[in-house]
Image (cartoon, rainbow, N blue to C red; front, side, top):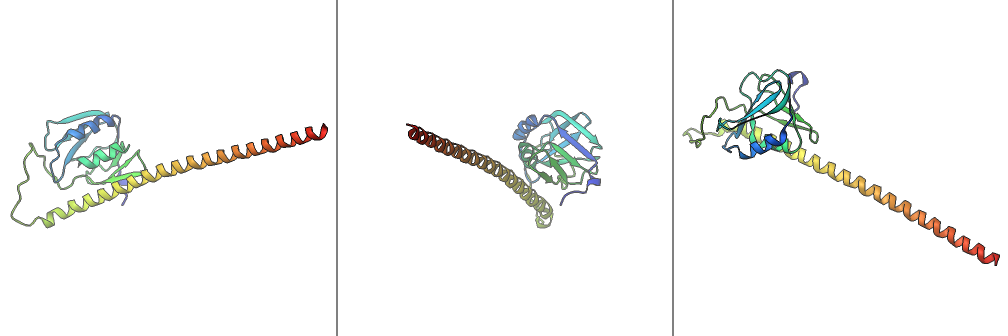
Length: 203
């Protein structure tokens, strides 16, 4: 479901997406959240690995509106996918809980911020299983991951469909050009044959 426009009071444009992509590729990948914090300022944005806070990247950006008032993080793989597909404009809410609406690629890409993570991890450490059942705790995050995956699949399909439509239009144009060229040759052949017949009659 698309977030309501009135809730999107934070608009960020990443001006150096290639640098962010390279940074995300080397950020440690620790489940379950695989979170990367995003700090926004008027002229810059800072990406910080939540599991390795010393890993950070500051890039040029444009912020319109109010930055989130609390810790704002996105799943590393979802953020990487958005940037790789050309999405570099992000709209969300300053409350830090509003879904992110990304534009700039094919259509619109919706992603949920990592809500289940309330505190930063200061160093990389294994996830220690607890004795109590985890089913109820993991359901919300699993649902978010499923929706993000579906959104990514839909956006991938849109991109492929657009490419197919473009190729179809190109082929249609070439067929029309070939048909016109063939008709022109036929006209020239008919005109040449008539000219020969007139010459024969004149002799």
